[in-house]
Amino acid sequence: MSGSAEPYGREGLPLEEARRRVLAAIQPITASNTVPLQQALGRVSAAAVLASEAVPGFRASIMDGYALGQSHQPKPGETWLLKGRSAAGQPFNGTLANGDAIRILTGAPLPDGAGWVLPQELISIDGSSLQLAKKASDRPWIRPEDEECRPGDLLLSAGQRLGAADLARLAGCGIADLTVAQQPRIGLLISGDELVPPGTARQPGAIWESNGTLLETMLRALRQSVTERRVVADQPDALRQALLDLAHDCDVVVSTGGVSAGDTDWIRPLVAELGAVDFWKLFLRPGRPFAFGSIGEGVPFFGLPGNPVAAAVTALQLLWPALQVLEGQSEPELFPRVMVELADPLSRRPGRPELARARLDTNAAGKLLARVDGSQASSRIGSLQQADLLLELPAEAGPLERGTRLWAQVIRQRIF
Ligand SMILES: Nc1nc2c(c(=O)[nH]1)N[C@H]1C(S)=C(S)[C@@H](COP(=O)(O)OP(=O)(O)OC[C@H]3O[C@@H](n4cnc5c(N)ncnc54)[C@H](O)[C@@H]3O)O[C@H]1N2
Ligand code: MOO
Image 1: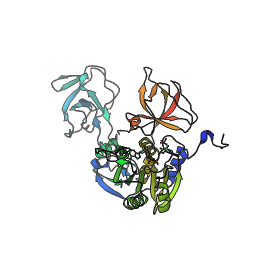
Image 2 (image 1 turned 135 degrees about the vertical axis):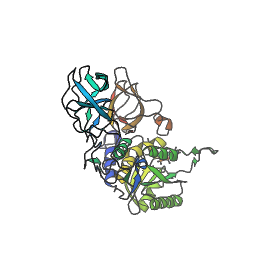
Image 3 (image 1 turned 90 degrees about the vertical axis):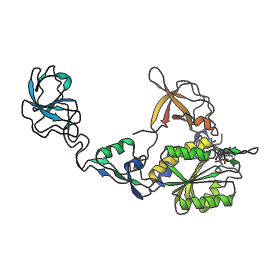
Image 4 (image 1 turned 30 degrees about the vertical axis):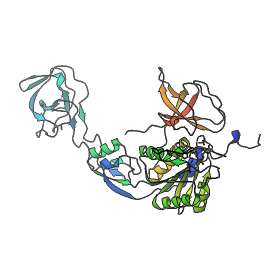
């Protein structure tokens, strides 16, 4: 025993604490611009949007049928005189009195005096006389004029990430353009002597560079974009210049590799020289050597580990929330957590809390199951393929039996 007060040899910050530290250090970018709705998908609204008028703005029929000059439920056998027709975009301009009816189509405006709609299936027609042939429901089948919104209603708050439904609702309320926050420019520094581009031949010991592809595409899926990427060998002068250039051109600098304890791990000393290291090391697997700090005049810096899975997991847990705050999102969205059961036994040794990659499945009873396939090494990118879940394994957990209940983050994105 080391005599340490920390259980299980804890070193580094627990993830929650690290996230608090990161978010406390991030200031939103305040610049914005106006774009057509179609270009606003996945962006963050920079201003609240209020409705200027009621939508639909008129009482409309919910059914194809007949609108009646009355506001009470009709009885079978009752009759009305047909006075005209109202279709969507072609309203009937007169007023209905008791005993009057018009032909009306779904979505068409109700004329003055109309207070009830009968679906056509209930009606028998003889010339211009209508009769209710069956029992009518107690629903008048009328959509209120302010069903979607009233004038002055809040359609969208500032600081909201925009989905298809937000944009469609604005379109439906007559709005064509929207003010959105500027997206953070992400500068990515990929470091490592061993790295060669995929598609090229490699010398013994070389590694095909994959973190660039992984992080750029993963961030794109999260509606963020890497605007500059450098691949640099483990040379302090070249790394220093790359960090300075990226901090000059971008709103946030992200590096991978060279952040642990080896002889060529230059990243931390360089960030300490060019700015400050706020913290180093997470009590987490994968992702222990993660570093957070700033470069120059407060450009946030994220030093992700070189192992691809560690880079991806720490980017999801710490970089992504920070990017959302930088972009002005009022509440950073975290992945929803659900309770799942292990579909199979899982071998494991106590140590660091772990975020294991798993697929989500259900059994016949509808129970949520987590399937963990293959090695969870932080170097194996294959462990990320098809992953729906990051399974939260407690630090103290040893081998886990099938059926063990665990919390898991659902790493799937919303549509609306
Ligand atoms: N003495 C210690 N050694 C290590 C520790 C430690 O705490 N003490 N932590 C280990 C853990 S955990 C991790 S994770 C790694 C991360 O180290 P670095 O961030 O310094 O990363 P590198 O050593 O540069 O690379 C690690 C691994 O990943 C490969 N790699 C790097 N970049 C890329 C890339 N762009 N594309 C694909 N693969 C990449 C690299 O070749 C290495 O295999 O440190 C442990 N060691
Ligand atoms: O923290 Mo590292 O990612 O386990 O190999």
